[in-house]
Image (cartoon, helix red, strand yellow):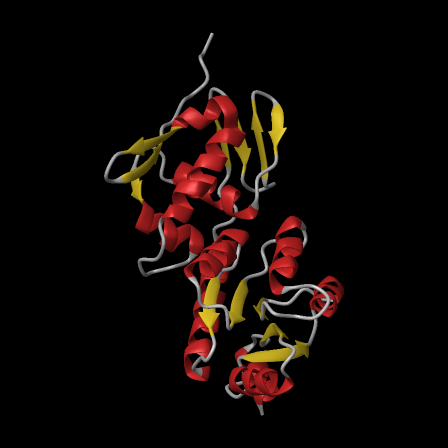
Length: 246
């Protein structure tokens, strides 16, 4: 019935990879996600099996436990974000680790959401839909052209950034942070707004993650890092610096 529904609508179901070594929990998640016909879920029970499955066929989203055999969920996420072919796959961490340090570490590593056990299947399904919507919107706006400044050249279509002619390697989060700041150049953007638009959170969480990422981005951008200004009490602003015309 689900396949018929999606055939009529002309859209395939989302492919979701559940990385969970407790089979009962994984089965419940799979059932909750597939019951509406909007998704098809596969299950693997270890970190190395997750990387193998994603390499063979990248999913639309990963639900990732952290306490896994062979490779931990954190290591899986680290590998994922280091690969150009997989770094944009959304990740929801689903774990029994409830400390603030664990949440911050997971989000800074590149998770799109962080859910603690025990959890509600309805809430998990809702968060999956929300992350998929954000990912679709991000992909739709990925082609944002090229910025050329006095020191910085960023080709957002090609995911390439250079400062004074030298290529700069950015993480996925740093690249998206730079892109959003450039899109809104000369405007002050609050930390909460950056969390919403770059991290995908529409509620107030630990904002120090924004400050950490801005600091790292400034360092990597070298001379162009000065274009990211701190507006005390408000947030950050990317100041346009065009090259001098001779």
